[in-house]
Amino acid sequence: MSTAEETAGGEIEPWEEVTPDAARRLLVAAVEAFAERGYHATTTRDIAGRAGMSPAALYIHYKTKEELLHRISRIGHDRALDILRTAAAGGGDATGRLADAVSSFVRWHAGRRTTARVVQYELDALGPDARAEILDLRRQVDAEVRGIIEDGVASGEFTVLDVQGTTLAVLSLCIDVARWFNVDGPRTPDEVGALYADLVLRMVGAAK
Image (cartoon, rainbow, N blue to C red):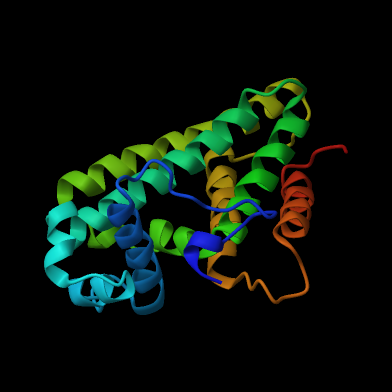
């Protein structure tokens, strides 16, 4: 299954914000190449070849290979942050919001596993300015999950001695799904999301 076809339940990953079509094709090819070979082992020729284009054509849309990685990272982190913000802002108690946040976050990392592997594990390949931008987005991701856990502790729903450490554990658990999830495995992204939501609620001592 190609990156363009990865789903979290049948929905096509269109990268609709990337235009024109040639730029989108190059970005999809870069995601596939970076996930398969790693950023440093991938050349611009590799990316252009996967997109069915000449190496010279790549530079019309992206000045450098790093610019491609930065665009992928920015879009991926924006989507991940939007998922968590939507769950955090939802109605209901902290238990329900944390379950929604974890299940949605896990479904994205499973259903978009190729993209997620690049987004989550190639950060160090970015230059200082781009890396700082992505780290700021990661801090916002952390804050959304931490805020839900803090709400649960304040309401008495959760028993957590170390909120920051627990937040890190929850995010690490979710993100790692992108590393091992197999579309041919025994569980769907929805099923993994439900499993992890249950595990995290147990982790924070929620009375379900």
